[in-house]
Image 1 (tube, rainbow, N blue to C red):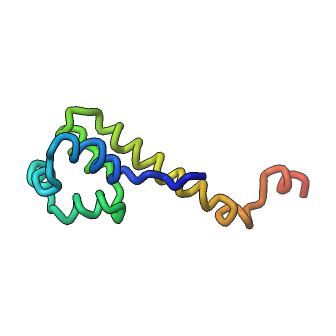
Image 2: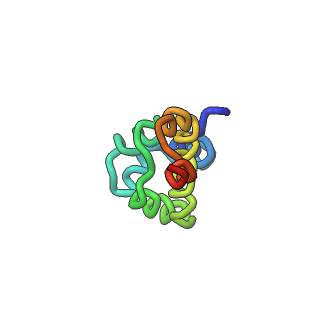
Length: 98
């Protein structure tokens, strides 16, 4: 399974760079710190529901677009850890049969 793509990478590569918008300019426009945008772009911070609303407004998109990117990323990360996450989970049919 390929590594999931963080929404911050999509923000940088598919929006900021092609549109010529700096991280600082985006931060100022969203009324947040440049550090916040930097952390998102670097994959150190996720896109919260509140941030998805700000990004949606800035880019003229539905906030759900940004939130869905984050949800998909989180889900793909969890799938990569599925065996570890479910190693000790008992399944319903085993509980019913017991």
